[in-house]
Amino acid sequence: EAAMHRASELDPELIETRCATAWLKLLVVRDWTGAGITFDEVLLERPFCTPALVGRALLSIAEDRLTDAAEFLREVSTQRPLNTSAAALLCWQEYLAGNFENALAFVSQLRATGHAGRILDAVEALAGVLLKGPEANLERLSHQLEDSPRQYAKLGVLGYVYGMTGQSEKALAIIDAMTVVGISGKCDYAYSVALTFLGLNEHKAAMEWLQRSYLQGSLWSLGFQLDPILAPLRSDPQTKGSFDSMGCVAA
Image (cartoon, rainbow, N blue to C red; front, side):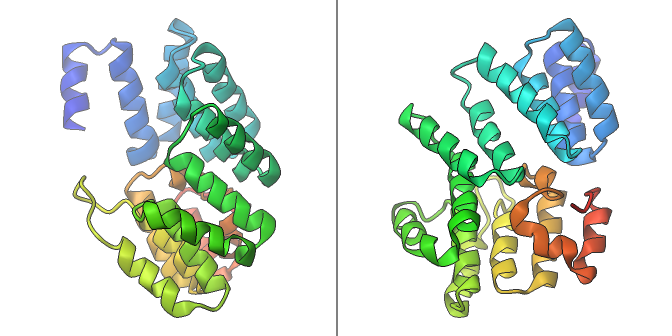
């Protein structure tokens, strides 16, 4: 915030500064109206500005407008074919829409062209579990995490699978493995811990960790109102109200 304030003093009209300010409003301040106004103003001046297009896409996800989000992300992919983030976010958008087969197909296509990253890993794990069931994905997830134990999103899905299959001790061990402070000085595993508690059917604990994820401005928090795996929390009277407090709309 201090950096954005200083940049605005130096050159308030600089597009990069305005985009960064809008991203801050989107993820931290949660001033979605203000973020949308800034993104739209930037796109009027520079129609193919990637940070503004991606920001507008994520804002559309937060506002439950997945069709608009897909259009913004496809525009980025068209204008910037090598932009890996937009392609990965398109996979996430398909997952949020409940199109699990499409999401997995997109992930496979991107991997075939050399794409990689945590968003793809997370979408592949989440869509795979919801499409094929927890037990069908247990061995595959366990094997993949042997070489990459700090892939928190996949760890969270594995913890969810352990919980759903009655392996509570292993699920709790997953939580212990994740709850360490990252390089940034703050935890980046809150969404993953929430998934594990959800698998254990501990809805209150899962909701508490989702709120941490929201307060930290995580990417995943923008999709809480749509995330298919979180449906039990949105329908539980004890946790439904917490979604409203986070600015989420129950699906």
